[in-house]
Image (cartoon, rainbow, N blue to C red; front, side):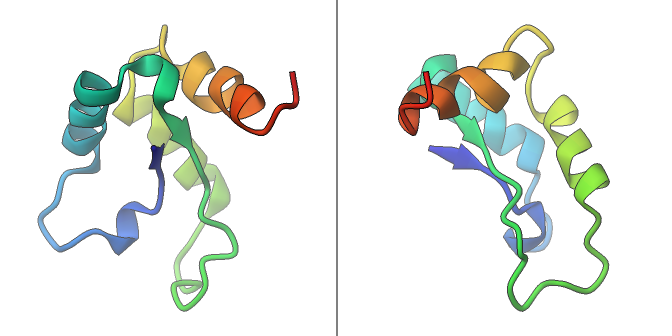
Length: 79
């Protein structure tokens, strides 16, 4: 499961709370972060740096390396 594109959520949804729930359900070894680039039909006001920093608000620092690197590498067989 991936966490990305908070701007696509319904108004009032809390992406950090949703990420916590996904972590509870799936575990930290089954979650990946995605930039959702190129933001098709949502280009206005997007900033990659701000979006990338959002993962710091969504997952604990000790889980971030798995969500950002380890899990995607395993999923896409880079490692």
